[in-house]
Amino acid sequence: MSGDVSMADVSVGNTEEIAVEDDKMTILPGMASDGSAASFKIKDEDHTLGNTLRYMIMKNPDVEFCGYSIPHPNDNHMHLRIQTYGEITAIEALQKGLRDLVDVCDVVENKFRDEYNKGDYVQEEIA
Image (cartoon, rainbow, N blue to C red; front, top):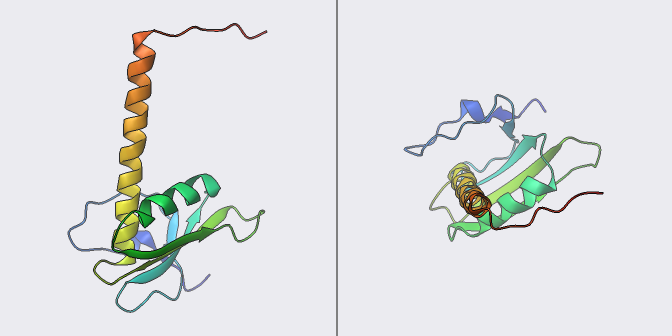
């Protein structure tokens, strides 16, 4: 869409920056003038990221609504809509959701590695 804005072109206050590939994520037209609501297009992602990211963003008490959709099964992208109560912007809510999701993934990975390194498991042969 010609009205899409690349996330690389958006800056938000004093928030920690999250590395995103160029053109991976864009803001769709229709962002609220105060930044409290926005829709994002995220390329090369599906329900796996959509549902987990939606869940993490909705845990934020400053977020009023967050939902995602895959516009068409043949489309290789998802749309994410975030609406806040106005205390933070939709972009800040997205950044916090991404950071929180990375933190959860780090905990899961560390717990898995700890258990794996204990060696207290049985390795089965695959026939």
